[in-house]
Length: 380
Image 1 (cartoon, rainbow, N blue to C red):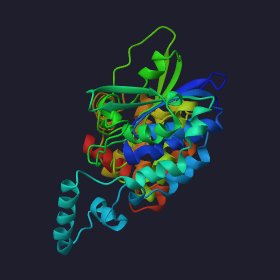
Image 2: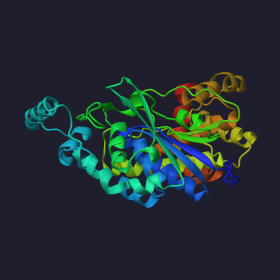
Image 3: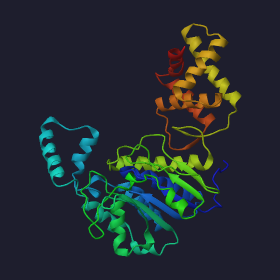
Image 4: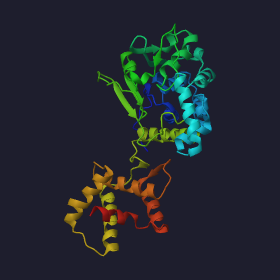
């Protein structure tokens, strides 16, 4: 496979906010490191600031250790069992009263106690390593006291303020907010800029990779194009879970998703659910699509005119699957639908012909063997 990613360049990395979704950024980081990533600056908001600190320290092993094992109680003063039941919808009627009393107690106390998060920062983030790093590190928070965005070049801070500023960037609205830095109060940096590309541009960085965590709170500041500046985005096309779902199984999934989404970025892979190396021509994909439609006609005993196929059926397939490109794009979207329905594993790089082969084998061995033709029936 040929890389679309220029590993000869030195990049600046912008990491978005998103709470428990932060494992995705670590997966992206590991994947890009494997492809020869060179970086000399990183910026982060909220959880992106935590991961940015680890990137500034050049400590990928620490980052993977943290995110592979993180639990609710590592971030908030809560019960892992209770939080799991909340997010899994597994609360029994007899438990509701107790939980409501807990919620009332948290609200009365000013929010969720994040003492565990403070301890986590002290355990994993080394202020001295950040200040002496060859990587410039910027974080974004919002000062409630001054009512304005607060952008910080972290190496300019005294060492004893670095943990506090990381916490300031991550003060999610539900968290108990305590004053820092001489009595000032801050809130999550996503209020100002959930994906801090601008601090990197303002400090002269030209080649930027921005990792966006979708589905979170906050606003993403509009990036104004400047001469010589290139911003490339990596973002998930699948859900990363809730902002506060600090569950190991979810975070490990997010790490894998980030890892392979970065491979898609590096190699220009096709697909949204799968990571597909293109080997087929549009004509070959078109012929496969016609086989699918032909299978419906054969199984249903009906006939479809060529005009209906091209003017009705194929446009409806394209619309249903969000395929806006040529017939290859239509076929890949349809093939992904079938692969997902048959639960064919997604976390690997696979050639389009190999995925097609696995789908056909699944159809042959499965009671869902007529899935594709039945799907066509709905569109005719």
